[in-house]
Amino acid sequence: MPLTPLDIHNKEFSKAFRGYDEDEVNEFLDQVIKDYEMIIREKKELEEKTKELNERLSHFSSIEQTLNKSILVAQETAEDVKSNAQKEAKLIIKEAEKNADRIINEALIKSRKIQTEIDELKKQSKVFRNRFRMLIEAQLEMIQMNDWDHLMEYEQKDKELEENRV
Image: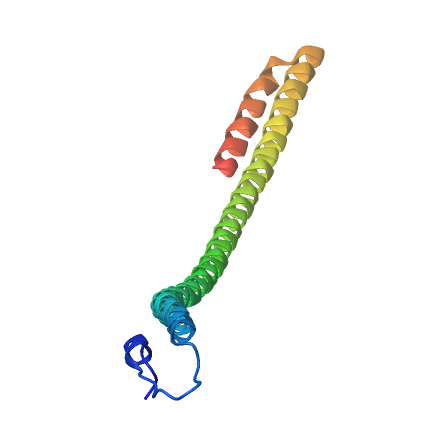
């Protein structure tokens, strides 16, 4: 068991003839007691400080673990968000491609329909021009021949052409 300042203070030495000077020994012991008490106080302070620092270290270690877990969760969340965003982008692109194909197909169908209408109008125009030309030629022929009797024949032909057209 270690010595205490009280043990040092209460220590009695036996007296011998021609021994040490009692006052010097007592003074030295008093100095040793003061130094020893100071060392014990410093030791207690250091132990308390060590205990406090260990508690703080434990607290900061706990915070570090929490932060590490939070970082991992944040990284996982970021990966999930990124993955979901990529999936959503692919879906949007796929939907846009479908819409583009639909629009293109509708435009092609409309274009073909318009082309068919144009072709039909060209045919009608050609028929109309031919009929109109024939009418003008017949009128010119009548004017040139001065033969009004043939007018009835041309009217008959005109009627026949109209019936054939319908």
